[in-house]
Image 1 (tube, rainbow, N blue to C red):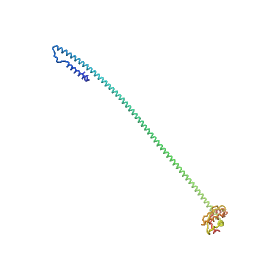
Image 2: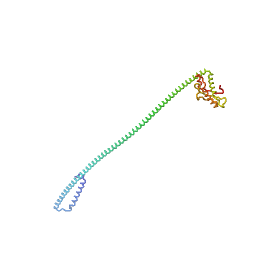
Image 3: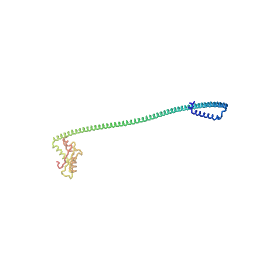
Image 4: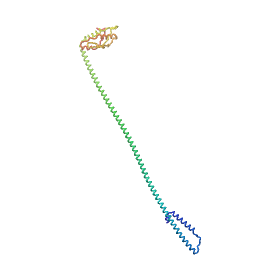
Length: 313
């Protein structure tokens, strides 16, 4: 019982208060000044002691009842406290579980949010990589196109230069060929001219040989005849002095016919009237006498005459 009281201070305090009250009741309710009287008094005292003993027993019983009530009340209180603690523990555990669940839910949400953010970051990074790769490919394609265009232009330029070089070489070859042909033509022409010159030289030599064979008198005779005919056709212009002479050229065809317009003064006399009269006299003398021999007549195709009327035969 004392162990119970030590464990329950409230019950101990109530028990102490109960005993103090009981002692005060006994002190106040008993007259301690009454003197005992004989033997009758002894009986009364015995009777008082019995009553006090019963009261003590009743008080003790009441104390026990009170203590029991206190014990039960304490047990009920402890039970309630235990139940309250148990409820508090269960509430704490439930709160702990709730918090744990909430924490797990929060962690799940955080992880989900983290995964979502990671996925979003991954998608964003993938989009950036895709954009970067697309931009890189675009730039690479643009670079390839520029290089291809530059290569095409370079090839075109090479072809143009090659074509220009081919044309230049062809033109050079053509010019060289034309120059070769020109030189060949010039050489042929020169050769022909040389041959013609040789032929003319041979002809002249032949003519010279023929002329050498002809007597000088025959040639001089025809020249004298021509000069006589011109002199007979000449009319001295008024006011002309003696000692004048001029040189004229004339071309003849066939039997001595003068080619129209072929009479020209090659060296004048200084007197234009005299020179004109000589030209008129030549035309009046047409046709001029020429040899019958064709080879000798060829010497008279173009004549150069010195007209001097004062020395004419």
